[in-house]
Length: 409
Image 1 (cartoon, rainbow, N blue to C red):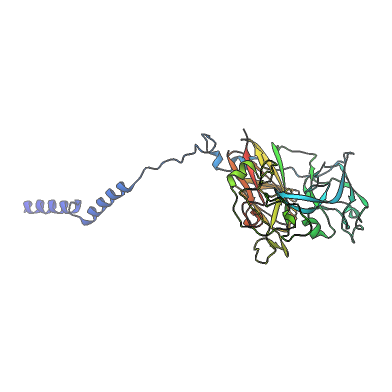
Image 2 (image 1 turned 45 degrees about the horizontal axis):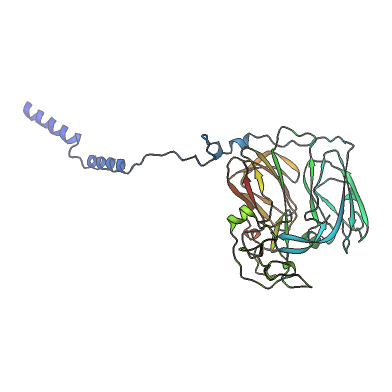
């Protein structure tokens, strides 16, 4: 009897421990398969990020630690007068090498001179009208006396050709603003009658920037039909194009060459626009993205120039860079920066107590934004409008609202 009990116990023990269990066999095979498929986890290679040992560049930590712009609570008049003389006059303006158009300008440039003062200063602007039509100046976003607002039929009479008018007001709030015509507004602004106005704070606060750039966005409709006599060389298909040319085949430009050299109009070259033909197109309802408020814009500019003739944003590694964005055009421009995040530190001249960290900011018509970024990712990057019709010249890319962010040694 004892022998039977012992044998029974041994049999049960062998059965339960498993040599013959189907489940145990499957688990064993599964474990072996997993171990064969398992690969070692490797750390990401960060050596390309400025050859830095730390990985702060991959985060927004440094941006989040920066202080906000100071807000203005009170202004003390300084007694200083900043006087500017502006002459509204027609001129020929080159949007990009070889492409000129008739423009309305302040002092012969598009945009007009930047007006700059400190909070508490008195700004005095003497406007002389040398146009063939009436005009005025509106101070966009500023709190000023009603009779200085520059809106004919409401706050003043329009300034007639040959006449002058003096605007005078206190620079009352730090920020980024614009000035522009407010008579026949659409055609006069579209032809270039605008400029930037910057008011610096009396209290600078703790935020210090190493560099500052401004970007004022404009839209242009360059016609395609010839009107009047134009000088045109046989070697340069681009000369005299603002009044119109016959259509030529479209070609994309060499973006690497343009990033390095721009599209400079060099006298010694037979064709200063070789490799990048950008003929203006006829107005068409099919120009999706370029038709805004009934206007067919075929060129978009930053500070009066289209890429690749836009000025680069030059930085050095480690610098904190301030960019003032302003949209005088009738288009919406989502501005996107490659390779970096940036902070939105002010909107329409008002500091944000908690800056937003983004890589794209949408600048609507009439809006201004102040942004800043840390130059911590060396290379050649672009900052451009992500409404991609706005990064073309006469429907040919790249062009329009685009600048190169270039690291300098």
